[in-house]
Length: 165
Ligand SMILES: [Zn+2]
Ligand SMILES: [Zn+2]
Ligand SMILES: [Zn+2]
Image 1: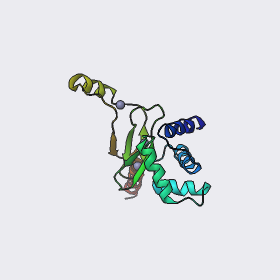
Image 2: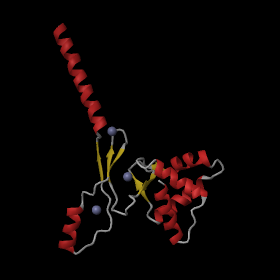
Image 3: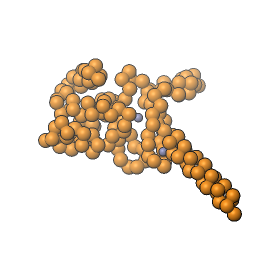
């Protein structure tokens, strides 16, 4: 955590920005909730715990700055709310997302599944891939398992009824 903050601090300094306490608090909130895809309001509410006097505009400006510097990626998962996604530390390509259309969960795949495709693009199109977005829309394993459990339950119920009649 501290190492990553230090790295972000250096990145800001290279661009002549300072990691002010408010900015640092914002970065910490993003790091602490790395698996989540927080909206500006979500980040604001969490930063406010530590800095009650901080305004939404300040948090918003920090998030915009971090996204310009590619520390975070501004995402939209189809609900019209901009969400901020922390990029991987080592500057790899952006991770993939599994977006559940039923419960709205967004799961992450950290492994780069596009490496073969990137090689193909380099070979066949002489195109160097710098980054990509890959989001899958579907139904998550939790929703599927819930559905399957419900179907099993319905089956058992109808068996009981059939036995009665
Ligand atoms: Zn993500
Ligand atoms: Zn890649
Ligand atoms: Zn789901």
